[in-house]
Structure formats: C-alpha cells, structure tokens
View 1 (cartoon, rainbow, N blue to C red):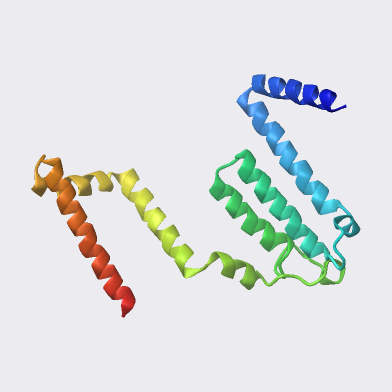
View 2 (tube, rainbow, N blue to C red):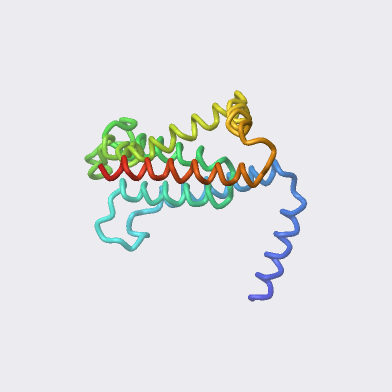
Amino acid sequence: MALIWLRSITVLALITGFIHQKNQIIIKSAIVLLATLLLWNLPSSAFGIEGLTIVQQRVIAIFAFATLMWILEIVPSWATSVSIIVMMLLFTSNSGINFMVDEEKVGKLLSYKDIMACFADPVIMLFIGGFILAIAATKTGLDAQLARILLKPFGHNSTVTIKVTMTMFLWLLCLALLSISR
C-alpha cells in the first residue's frame, strides 16, 4: 500500500513539474481554497473542541488559509497579510457582513477595534513608514544620490570610507541610545 502511495506521489511530482507556471498557480490556489472551505464548513464537532463557536472555527479556517498561502507563495506575503485583516474584519468582527456575523447564530463576535489594534501597533507603523520611505527613495533615485553625496568627501579610498562610515554609525547609535534612555 505504501509503495502505491509512493509511486502516485512520484508520478504527481513529475506531472506537476511539467505543468506550466500559470497552471501551478491555479492548482495551488485550488488547494488553498478547498482546504479553507473545508475547515470553514465542517461541523464544529469535527474539530474535537468542546464549545467551539462558528467565529472560532472561522478564525481556524483563516489561519489555515494564511499558512497555506505563505507556504505555497501564490501571492506576495504582504498581500496575504492584508487579506487576513480583511477576512477577519468581514467574517469575525462586529462590523462585518450582516448575514455572516449574526451574533445569535455564530457566537460572540470579535471587536473590530481589537482586530485592528493588533495591526496598528506603533512599532509596526514605524516599520511600515520606514519601508514606504525606502521604496520611495529607491524609485526616485534619492538613495543613490545621497550615497554619492555622503561618500564624495572621503575620496576613492575604501579603508577611509569604511572607517568614517563606522564612526558615523557609532555616533548615531550613541545618540539613539541617549534619546531612548531619557
């Protein structure tokens, strides 16, 4: 029996190796969709957790969706992350789609403010702002211009450039630590 499974897996791997990239995306998307819908529509008793509400079951299905999307890399990671937020808001929060979030049928709903609070932490917003500035600087060419301007006074000697860069970095680190300790 195990040999048959091994052969079928080998044949499946060979077949999928020959399938075109677009077909692979379609197959991967179908796998994610089927797994998510299966977990979404299973009876609560199938999970083996007593007192499992429909909202909690939906969170499990969304978690499985996110995990499969990240593993199979169907879309970029950021798109998966945004889709998690949207699905949580639409299907498990008190401000979701009316017929999907009837509290009498699905159980206690999550607060939309609590859902968004997880994603709106100040540190996360700081990172997002930094990434946006970095992308903007790269697209406009500002990063290369700043590098040329900052490295110009040090000439073409790499050892001097490295020493000065390290010194500047240490001074910036000292300033940052001083500002944090206050």
